[in-house]
Amino acid sequence: MLTSSNLRAAAVAVAALLCTGVAEASNYRLADAEITSVAETRALAAEGIADTATLFQRAHTRELRKGLAARAKLDAGRLEVLAVLCDVLRVDGIGPTMARALGRVGVSTVAALRTEDAERLQARLEADARKQAGPNADPMPVPPVELLAKWIASAAALPLRLER
Image (cartoon, rainbow, N blue to C red):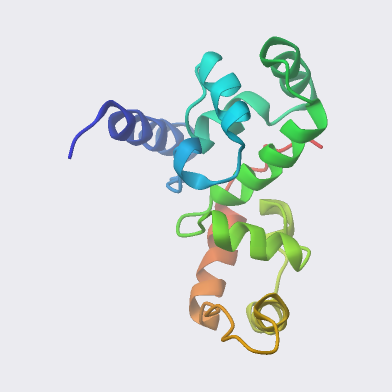
């Protein structure tokens, strides 16, 4: 179904490709991504921010976060946490659940991901999945090494835009 949200997401991806030569395809509606509270989603929507790509664009520097925090009446530190999460979401194929898992194993940014070894990263993700599941549950599936290597290569091709 073609919606204004889909059109906006496509426009962001095309603009990213035209401007950088690299498609930044992973983009999620904040209301669906489960990374913001209802109150945060509403405050950001009032500022014209409804998806992760727009949030990253409007919060990737300290100065942008400071201004957005004042206008939206949100904590600048919380906006930094969201910007970091949205940075990893720029990698095509990484969704919010995997971005959180990557963050738990110390890979919270595109800059960090591009320096990883796929096999070592897979081992850390497997250990994290077992820990998250607990002793009586099956762990979340971990991506194969080939997919992790693809994400690492994609991260290496993306421009480093996050300022912490």
